[in-house]
Length: 321
Image (cartoon, rainbow, N blue to C red; front, side, top):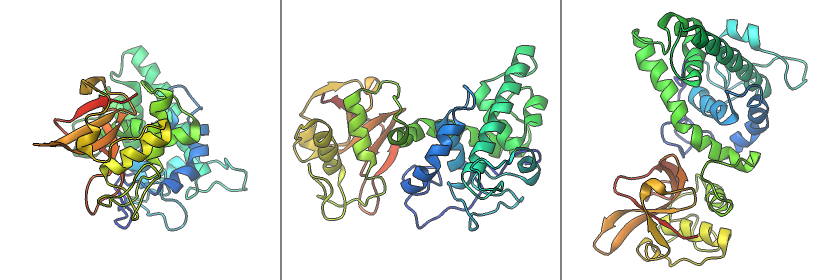
C-alpha cells in the first residue's frame, strides 16, 4: 500500500504453531512476553493508542515474528511492524540503546509504531475538528497505518472505493478492533490491567485458564490440580481454573457443572462466568470461561488446543461466585 506501513497481515502464517486466537497469526505466549515491556511503554506515548491495540496490530501485521528470519512482505515491508523503508527512515530510532535502529528487532519497531500511530492519531483529531474527516479516530489511525495518512484525508474518513481499501484496509481495521479485548486479556498478567466488568476473582479464573493456552485437548484430561494426560478437556479446564482461583470444587462434567451457581442472561456475563453450549437431552455438552467481548477461553475438541474463541450461538451463562 503506497504510503502505508505494511501489508496488513499478508505475511505467511506458521501452520506448525497452534492458532489460539482465531483469525490471527499469533506466536506463542512466550513471544508476547518478550514484546510486552515495549508494548507497555509504547502504549503510554499518547492517550488514544494503548498497548492492547498495538499488540493486536502486531498480530495482524506479522504475527510477532522478528529477527533475521522474519518474513518480508511482497512489497518490501520488514520486521514485526512491517515497515516500508521510507516510513522506517522517518520513525526508526534506537529505542533500546544497542547502538542501531533495527527494523527486525523488538524495541525499535514497537516504539516506532507507537510514535507513528500517535502522530497520526493527533493529525486525525485535528482534521476531525476542522470537519475534513469523519469517523472513529482510532479506526482511522489504524487505517492510516495500513494505507497511509493521505488515504484517510483523501477519503474524508475511512479509506474506501479502491479494491485495496475495501479488501485489505477495512478488514485490517476490523480484525484489530475485534481482537483488542483479547490482547488486553493476554497482556493483563504482564501489565496488571483491570478490565471493564472484571472482578478480582473473575480476573483470577481467566488468568489461570490463560496459562494453558495452546495446551492440547485431551478427553477426560485435567482436574482441580491441573492438566492430566498431557492436556485438558472442556470441564477439566473449568474445574482447574475455578478451584485454583476460589477453592470451589466443581462437579467433573459440563452437564453437572451446569447445576452449580445461578443462571444469568448471556448478555450480562462478565469475565470469569461459565458459559455452556452444545445442548443435549442430558444438558450441555460443552463449557468455557467467559472473558468479555463475546469471547471465551475453552478446550474445544479432539485435535484442538486450549484457545480463545467466540461464544457459540445458543450458549447460556452461569455465575458461580
